[in-house]
Image 1 (cartoon, rainbow, N blue to C red):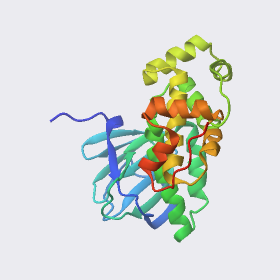
Image 2 (cartoon, one colour):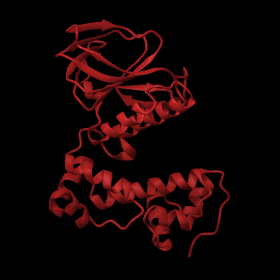
Image 3 (cartoon, helix red, strand yellow):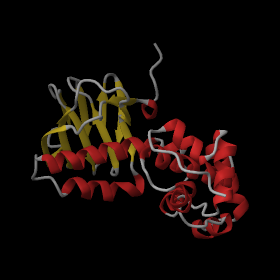
Image 4 (spheres, one colour):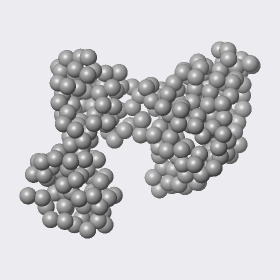
Length: 271
């Protein structure tokens, strides 16, 4: 049997409803160089601030500051520490079934996202109420999205590409020039283009267009926001250009997409 690389291992976690928080806390390990234990009936989320190795189901996962690890219920684990090892943990239960479970890596490097996610969970470390459940639910979905955020690659991205993707995500409703992205990333336009081609097998422009289309489709499916407003929200304020873009990508106009993909009442195509 071929053992997968640890980066390729992810768990299917049912997140159609909020998970039940059993306990949240911070802990320090490493007083014993090796610890072996199993959590019975509950999932474990760890936000690590130390270096170690954890063996789960025969696979060694490297731990480093800024990593997030998730371990399923009833799974034996063995930690090999290098000294004092602090982390934040969440023990939780999920529904037994979901039609579309979230896929969350067993271990991932959160990079620049670690501090924000650690702070989000730290704020509810004394709570086990509905607010804490909602916060954990949100964080787990974020971990799923960080692995593959709507077509963008996960934690193996070149730092320049990751920084650029993050900027695009935050400013998608604005006019974004490739030259400006390259300047913000501190590289040449041609170098940024090569990095995007290596990461996504497509250009920066195409990546942005695909992201805009995905966001537009989501809003058409899930909201009653007027089409002309959606066009502005996804950074294509020219309605004719917006119509052409969606038709080229989907084979249908925004109005047709809304009519076919959701229950939102149709409205006339924008001229």
